[in-house]
Amino acid sequence: MKRTAFGVLVAVTYAWWATGIAPFTALSYVLVAVPVTALVASYAAMGALSPHRGDIGHHYRRCAGDASLKNVAAWLAVLVGAAALETAGLALGGRSRSVPTLSTTVDHLLVTHVGRWLLFVAWLWVGATALLRLGHRPRDEES
Image (cartoon, rainbow, N blue to C red; front, side):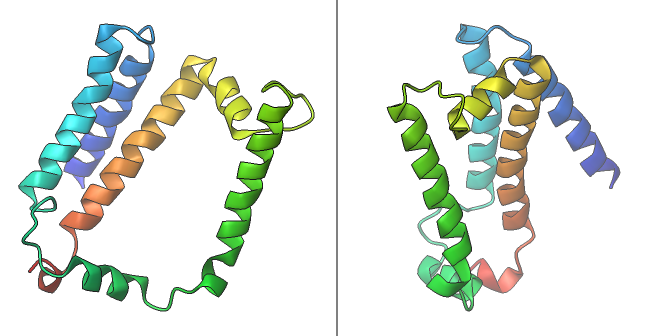
């Protein structure tokens, strides 16, 4: 538990520092590359990039369980709606006040340091979650 808390503290502090650097500079690119490189190296060390992991298709079919179009229809509707709003917003010149799009929302978040930090932490969380799930899978799935 202490190790996890320390890792979260390091990641959150790193994200705060990285999002305070001027964008599109060499240092900003390096600060994005560091967690990406660490994540890919961790995946490789855990054998996740190995072509000899067994039947990957079987693993995903088993994980999907009873997934069907009916089960994911709501998520597909949200995805189609978001794509339609984004398309409409771009067709209106990209800066429509009446059509909220994902890009305009993200633009508003990127204006402040706290917004950039929250997005960076979310990005780190997505990568770490996938890595943690890989580390906690049952031994019979590793083959």
